[in-house]
Length: 434
Ligand code: NIG
Ligand code: FE
Image (cartoon, rainbow, N blue to C red):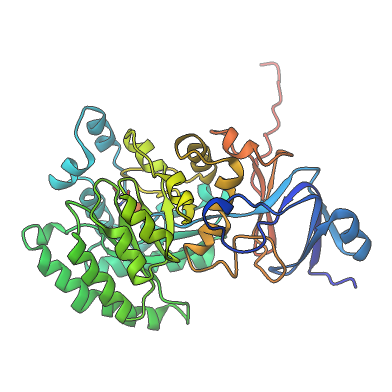
């Protein structure tokens, strides 16, 4: 058969298929490697994976792309970002280096709230333009799908503006975006002394408004996630429960920010409510780890956050794996704690700070990350019928991921079957005498 829309990418020194579904506990790290592998694509989909010899023999006339002995693997899935915001917080970074804590700055009306002020002022085209740069950084570094949260508006209109920017960018740019409504990211300045009024507004007005806006604007896409920042200085456990239960009653899938700075019990709440994921998990208690491990909720670790804050403590990842939990990794890209668009850097941190092997970090950043977005049937591995989201690396051994950091090992990103070269070719330099 010589179907023009078919292409075989062959001669991969290591083809990492990640086949077989999300990887629980100490099973994490099964890469499903095919040595000298190849993958056959048709349009946006993967049709087959096998050794290069067998696929080339079976499809002798199909168009070929030579991977030159390098690693071929699924695109990274980044299941926790706050990609859509306006402005920056370089001044706050300097303040923190002088000893002010993240929560002190937030309590004084800075931190998240200063990004809220900048984001409220921005128009949708301005938001899209600023976010597009970050989305391209992520894409060039191998992220093919990213979750994106609202949460820098904190009014109905400005939260919907963020959702609109996410949908607009998803429509035009190759990085696939999966939205989350995080109206419960902080208590807005107008409600500083009336947090419970804001919780009521969220439950009575904003969540229902997001649902009806979504139905009218999102062209049949599945509902976004609803997330809560369950933390001292943000939303307590009872408020988080109320918001998440309300969202669940409206049909939204759930997520939670839990145990970034203090253990309030958010992870166990996520497990109880069947949330797709519980994220951060730095101060998580043994009981909460057991609750997570006995559930289908994915534990999403964000090592860029303690690194970005200069904090010494990280997610107890090995404890989560020993308990049988589903572990995943994400960047948490945001202007306050972790302005990092590179999943490759997150893998490098995970190997050093969470004690993961490169193979475990890769599985946590692909198939398990897809599970944290309820998308494991569509993305996260290279298997027949899945979306053709594939990376070609510049190296022939997957362990270079994790081992190396600060340089981009991705040379090509394949998104929905379309190949994007991402390593820029050096411009020609002519040395003419003056
Ligand atoms: O996941 N902690 C809450 N939200 C973000 C930080 C957002 C910000 O500081 O702007 C996080 O770390
Ligand atoms: Fe976050």
